[in-house]
Length: 266
Image (cartoon, rainbow, N blue to C red; front, side, top):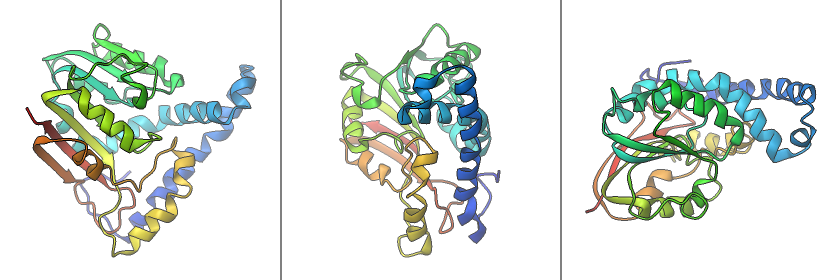
Protein backbone atom coordinates (compact mmCIF):
# COMPACT_ATOMS: atom_id res chain seq x y z
CA UNK A 1 0.00 0.00 0.00
CA UNK A 2 1.20 3.55 -0.63
CA UNK A 3 2.63 5.49 2.26
CA UNK A 4 0.14 8.01 3.65
CA UNK A 5 2.72 10.77 3.27
CA UNK A 6 3.19 10.23 -0.48
CA UNK A 7 1.49 12.63 -2.92
CA UNK A 8 -1.38 11.08 -4.81
CA UNK A 9 -2.56 11.25 -8.42
CA UNK A 10 -5.64 10.31 -10.47
CA UNK A 11 -4.98 6.58 -10.13
CA UNK A 12 -5.58 6.96 -6.40
CA UNK A 13 -9.30 7.25 -7.24
CA UNK A 14 -9.23 3.49 -7.92
CA UNK A 15 -7.78 2.55 -4.54
CA UNK A 16 -11.21 2.09 -2.83
CA UNK A 17 -12.16 -0.48 -5.48
CA UNK A 18 -9.02 -2.47 -4.69
CA UNK A 19 -9.86 -2.42 -0.98
CA UNK A 20 -13.40 -3.62 -1.74
CA UNK A 21 -11.93 -6.57 -3.67
CA UNK A 22 -9.68 -7.43 -0.71
CA UNK A 23 -12.73 -7.52 1.56
CA UNK A 24 -14.81 -9.55 -0.92
CA UNK A 25 -12.06 -12.18 -1.08
CA UNK A 26 -12.81 -13.18 2.54
CA UNK A 27 -16.49 -14.02 1.95
CA UNK A 28 -15.85 -17.59 0.77
CA UNK A 29 -13.32 -18.51 3.52
CA UNK A 30 -15.79 -17.19 6.10
CA UNK A 31 -18.61 -19.36 4.71
CA UNK A 32 -16.36 -22.44 4.67
CA UNK A 33 -15.20 -21.81 8.25
CA UNK A 34 -18.79 -21.43 9.52
CA UNK A 35 -19.85 -24.66 7.80
CA UNK A 36 -16.87 -26.61 9.15
CA UNK A 37 -17.58 -25.35 12.68
CA UNK A 38 -21.35 -25.95 12.31
CA UNK A 39 -22.16 -22.30 12.99
CA UNK A 40 -25.30 -22.30 10.88
CA UNK A 41 -27.01 -19.64 13.00
CA UNK A 42 -24.27 -17.18 12.04
CA UNK A 43 -24.29 -18.37 8.44
CA UNK A 44 -27.99 -17.68 7.98
CA UNK A 45 -28.11 -14.39 9.89
CA UNK A 46 -27.05 -11.52 7.63
CA UNK A 47 -25.89 -9.26 10.47
CA UNK A 48 -24.05 -12.05 12.30
CA UNK A 49 -22.42 -13.22 9.07
CA UNK A 50 -21.22 -9.69 8.27
CA UNK A 51 -19.61 -9.47 11.73
CA UNK A 52 -17.84 -12.82 11.24
CA UNK A 53 -16.78 -11.90 7.69
CA UNK A 54 -15.43 -8.50 8.73
CA UNK A 55 -13.60 -9.96 11.74
CA UNK A 56 -11.86 -12.46 9.47
CA UNK A 57 -11.01 -9.79 6.90
CA UNK A 58 -9.76 -7.38 9.56
CA UNK A 59 -7.43 -9.98 11.03
CA UNK A 60 -5.55 -9.73 7.74
CA UNK A 61 -6.21 -6.09 6.86
CA UNK A 62 -5.84 -4.53 10.33
CA UNK A 63 -2.02 -4.79 10.50
CA UNK A 64 -1.76 -3.42 6.96
CA UNK A 65 -4.05 -0.57 7.93
CA UNK A 66 -1.70 0.23 10.81
CA UNK A 67 1.27 0.23 8.44
CA UNK A 68 -0.55 2.54 6.03
CA UNK A 69 -1.83 5.06 8.58
CA UNK A 70 0.90 4.69 11.20
CA UNK A 71 2.85 7.84 10.37
CA UNK A 72 -0.23 9.90 11.14
CA UNK A 73 -1.87 7.89 13.93
CA UNK A 74 1.14 6.91 16.05
CA UNK A 75 2.17 10.53 16.84
CA UNK A 76 -1.48 11.24 17.69
CA UNK A 77 -1.78 8.38 20.18
CA UNK A 78 1.69 8.50 21.76
CA UNK A 79 1.88 10.66 24.90
CA UNK A 80 -1.55 12.26 24.35
CA UNK A 81 -3.83 9.82 26.19
CA UNK A 82 -4.05 10.01 29.98
CA UNK A 83 -6.17 8.98 32.96
CA UNK A 84 -9.37 7.08 32.25
CA UNK A 85 -9.80 6.50 28.50
CA UNK A 86 -12.62 5.35 26.25
CA UNK A 87 -11.38 3.65 23.08
CA UNK A 88 -14.30 3.57 20.62
CA UNK A 89 -14.35 0.73 18.09
CA UNK A 90 -10.85 -0.70 18.73
CA UNK A 91 -11.53 -3.74 16.50
CA UNK A 92 -8.93 -6.40 17.20
CA UNK A 93 -6.67 -3.93 19.00
CA UNK A 94 -4.25 -3.06 16.24
CA UNK A 95 -3.40 0.29 17.88
CA UNK A 96 -3.16 -0.86 21.50
CA UNK A 97 0.63 -1.00 21.45
CA UNK A 98 0.62 2.80 21.36
CA UNK A 99 -1.04 2.91 24.80
CA UNK A 100 1.70 0.87 26.48
CA UNK A 101 3.18 2.43 29.62
CA UNK A 102 6.34 3.44 27.76
CA UNK A 103 4.25 5.71 25.52
CA UNK A 104 1.42 6.80 27.83
CA UNK A 105 2.53 6.26 31.41
CA UNK A 106 -0.34 8.26 32.93
CA UNK A 107 -3.14 6.02 31.62
CA UNK A 108 -4.98 4.40 34.53
CA UNK A 109 -7.87 2.65 32.75
CA UNK A 110 -9.02 1.97 29.17
CA UNK A 111 -12.55 0.97 28.22
CA UNK A 112 -12.54 -0.68 24.79
CA UNK A 113 -16.02 -0.21 23.32
CA UNK A 114 -16.35 -2.92 20.65
CA UNK A 115 -19.83 -4.18 19.64
CA UNK A 116 -18.45 -6.88 17.31
CA UNK A 117 -18.02 -9.82 19.69
CA UNK A 118 -16.16 -11.80 17.04
CA UNK A 119 -13.23 -9.45 17.65
CA UNK A 120 -13.15 -9.69 21.44
CA UNK A 121 -10.76 -12.63 21.70
CA UNK A 122 -8.09 -10.94 19.58
CA UNK A 123 -8.76 -7.60 21.27
CA UNK A 124 -8.10 -9.16 24.68
CA UNK A 125 -4.92 -10.79 23.36
CA UNK A 126 -3.74 -7.46 21.96
CA UNK A 127 -4.35 -5.77 25.32
CA UNK A 128 -2.32 -8.41 27.15
CA UNK A 129 0.47 -8.23 24.54
CA UNK A 130 0.65 -4.45 25.02
CA UNK A 131 0.96 -4.90 28.79
CA UNK A 132 -2.51 -3.47 29.37
CA UNK A 133 -4.25 -6.63 30.54
CA UNK A 134 -4.83 -5.28 34.04
CA UNK A 135 -6.32 -1.93 32.96
CA UNK A 136 -8.11 -2.76 29.69
CA UNK A 137 -11.81 -3.60 29.95
CA UNK A 138 -13.87 -4.59 26.92
CA UNK A 139 -17.41 -3.21 26.73
CA UNK A 140 -19.41 -5.22 24.22
CA UNK A 141 -22.03 -2.67 23.24
CA UNK A 142 -22.33 0.11 20.71
CA UNK A 143 -21.07 3.61 21.47
CA UNK A 144 -24.68 4.79 21.43
CA UNK A 145 -25.30 2.60 24.52
CA UNK A 146 -22.25 3.71 26.47
CA UNK A 147 -24.07 5.48 29.30
CA UNK A 148 -26.89 2.92 29.54
CA UNK A 149 -25.48 -0.58 28.97
CA UNK A 150 -21.83 0.48 29.28
CA UNK A 151 -22.19 2.18 32.64
CA UNK A 152 -19.95 5.15 31.76
CA UNK A 153 -20.94 8.22 33.77
CA UNK A 154 -20.97 11.86 32.58
CA UNK A 155 -17.75 13.77 33.28
CA UNK A 156 -15.80 10.58 34.10
CA UNK A 157 -13.48 10.27 31.10
CA UNK A 158 -10.12 12.01 30.60
CA UNK A 159 -9.50 10.88 27.01
CA UNK A 160 -11.77 9.75 24.18
CA UNK A 161 -10.07 7.91 21.30
CA UNK A 162 -11.77 7.46 17.93
CA UNK A 163 -9.68 5.96 15.14
CA UNK A 164 -11.65 5.23 11.97
CA UNK A 165 -14.77 4.19 13.87
CA UNK A 166 -17.30 7.04 13.76
CA UNK A 167 -17.78 6.24 10.08
CA UNK A 168 -19.36 2.88 11.03
CA UNK A 169 -21.68 3.89 13.85
CA UNK A 170 -25.38 3.74 12.81
CA UNK A 171 -26.37 7.07 14.43
CA UNK A 172 -23.14 9.12 14.41
CA UNK A 173 -24.54 12.54 15.26
CA UNK A 174 -26.43 11.12 18.24
CA UNK A 175 -23.37 9.22 19.45
CA UNK A 176 -21.06 12.20 19.10
CA UNK A 177 -23.46 14.33 21.16
CA UNK A 178 -23.52 11.59 23.82
CA UNK A 179 -19.74 11.22 23.90
CA UNK A 180 -19.12 14.90 24.62
CA UNK A 181 -20.81 14.85 28.08
CA UNK A 182 -18.76 11.87 29.34
CA UNK A 183 -15.56 13.85 28.78
CA UNK A 184 -14.26 15.76 31.79
CA UNK A 185 -13.75 19.53 31.49
CA UNK A 186 -10.22 19.87 30.10
CA UNK A 187 -10.37 16.32 28.74
CA UNK A 188 -9.08 15.44 25.27
CA UNK A 189 -10.65 13.82 22.24
CA UNK A 190 -8.06 12.14 19.97
CA UNK A 191 -9.42 11.68 16.46
CA UNK A 192 -8.41 10.05 13.17
CA UNK A 193 -11.54 9.68 11.06
CA UNK A 194 -12.85 9.39 7.51
CA UNK A 195 -14.64 12.56 6.39
CA UNK A 196 -16.61 13.91 3.47
CA UNK A 197 -14.20 15.26 0.87
CA UNK A 198 -13.66 19.00 1.00
CA UNK A 199 -13.18 19.11 -2.76
CA UNK A 200 -16.86 19.51 -3.54
CA UNK A 201 -16.17 21.22 -6.87
CA UNK A 202 -14.04 18.30 -8.13
CA UNK A 203 -14.88 14.91 -9.66
CA UNK A 204 -13.91 13.20 -6.39
CA UNK A 205 -17.03 14.58 -4.68
CA UNK A 206 -19.29 12.65 -7.08
CA UNK A 207 -16.98 9.63 -7.09
CA UNK A 208 -17.00 9.45 -3.29
CA UNK A 209 -20.82 9.34 -3.26
CA UNK A 210 -20.82 6.63 -5.97
CA UNK A 211 -18.24 4.46 -4.16
CA UNK A 212 -20.17 4.85 -0.93
CA UNK A 213 -23.15 3.06 -2.48
CA UNK A 214 -21.28 -0.26 -2.05
CA UNK A 215 -18.39 0.55 0.32
CA UNK A 216 -20.42 0.12 3.57
CA UNK A 217 -21.37 -3.45 2.60
CA UNK A 218 -17.71 -4.46 2.46
CA UNK A 219 -16.42 -2.44 5.42
CA UNK A 220 -18.85 -3.21 8.21
CA UNK A 221 -21.15 -0.25 7.65
CA UNK A 222 -18.41 2.35 7.12
CA UNK A 223 -19.79 5.53 5.51
CA UNK A 224 -17.08 7.66 3.89
CA UNK A 225 -19.32 10.67 3.15
CA UNK A 226 -19.97 11.88 6.69
CA UNK A 227 -18.87 15.40 7.77
CA UNK A 228 -17.70 13.89 11.06
CA UNK A 229 -15.30 16.74 11.85
CA UNK A 230 -18.15 19.26 11.64
CA UNK A 231 -20.38 17.14 13.88
CA UNK A 232 -17.71 16.83 16.57
CA UNK A 233 -16.99 20.55 16.51
CA UNK A 234 -20.72 21.23 16.95
CA UNK A 235 -21.15 18.75 19.81
CA UNK A 236 -20.12 21.20 22.54
CA UNK A 237 -17.71 23.91 23.61
CA UNK A 238 -14.00 23.38 22.99
CA UNK A 239 -11.13 25.21 24.64
CA UNK A 240 -8.62 24.16 21.99
CA UNK A 241 -8.98 22.54 18.55
CA UNK A 242 -6.00 21.12 16.68
CA UNK A 243 -7.38 19.31 13.62
CA UNK A 244 -5.87 18.93 10.18
CA UNK A 245 -6.55 16.94 7.04
CA UNK A 246 -4.54 13.83 6.21
CA UNK A 247 -1.04 14.49 4.91
CA UNK A 248 -0.90 14.94 1.12
CA UNK A 249 -4.62 14.15 0.76
CA UNK A 250 -6.23 16.12 -2.02
CA UNK A 251 -8.68 16.01 -4.96
CA UNK A 252 -7.86 12.39 -5.83
CA UNK A 253 -8.52 10.90 -2.40
CA UNK A 254 -11.89 9.20 -2.10
CA UNK A 255 -11.42 8.30 1.57
CA UNK A 256 -9.86 11.41 3.18
CA UNK A 257 -9.23 11.87 6.90
CA UNK A 258 -9.24 14.41 9.68
CA UNK A 259 -6.64 14.01 12.41
CA UNK A 260 -5.84 15.78 15.67
CA UNK A 261 -7.10 16.67 19.15
CA UNK A 262 -9.90 18.65 20.73
CA UNK A 263 -9.79 19.84 24.35
CA UNK A 264 -13.09 20.31 26.18
CA UNK A 265 -13.72 23.73 27.69
CA UNK A 266 -13.08 23.87 31.45
